Image 1 (cartoon, rainbow, N blue to C red):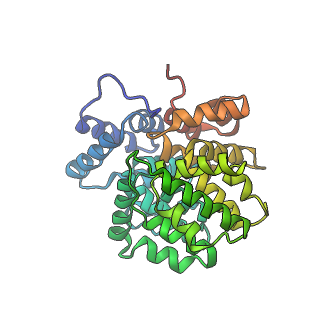
Image 2 (image 1 turned 60 degrees about the horizontal axis):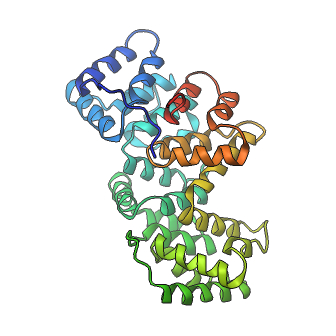
Image 3 (image 1 turned 135 degrees about the vertical axis):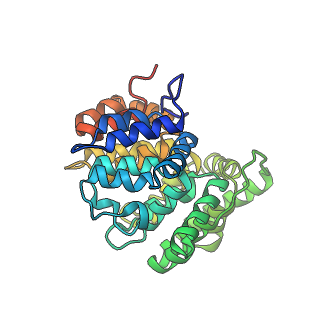
Length: 334
């Protein structure tokens, strides 16, 4: 369900690199050319471009993009990842995130989510719940390689209480990816979930065990039985206190595990409807979902808002940033 348009005939990585080098040359950066190339290459092709650029020019293209797009020659995000991406121009943010390898990108996002000024339990939950087991494992490996620590180590240090109790096992999970379901277990665990919710034991180890270890197919079976047996969807029962941040994160966890497009529809909607667009949230969703399930997110967005996502983005963004976002969500695709 990717929305990125790949041309019928793609130039060789070397040709792309030569054109990108030209885009960086002179007094002004040719941002249109950068978008024209990078926004229309898939993950494997972008990886080859990075490798080829390093071979030909002995430079990391992330560093070059960072330098050219941010207009800040002191920034060294691509090399050290120590500078917050929050400080960069919006076009810089989306191009850098998009050009990263997906595992490297998730590692970077997870690390940003543990920092004081950009801390976000939501981003950590998104990564843990919407990636495949293999992708999450690769992100943990990339985190370890980049930061010389485990993501679990950093999340444990930077979170507390119920948030830590939920997020660490979510990020540590390696769920079974198959479709096999045990209905006896589903019925038993639906009853456990209902019992703990009735007791308001939202942080109970059994509730957390079920959400953080069961396959998504098994969880769907459990939650369907919960709904049929007890008359409410579990997220309705988890709305006991709408202002409780942990319960809000718990509901989002359930949504991400069972129907991520509904979760991801809400992120850009909330980002755009704010007084002043939350460009970071919009950037993150587009850069991470364009090659995964953006088509479903677009369909859900239009169903929920009666406005296409590309129109909503066009109204709220401008310039090269808008061009890049629209290219990644497949604006104009048939």
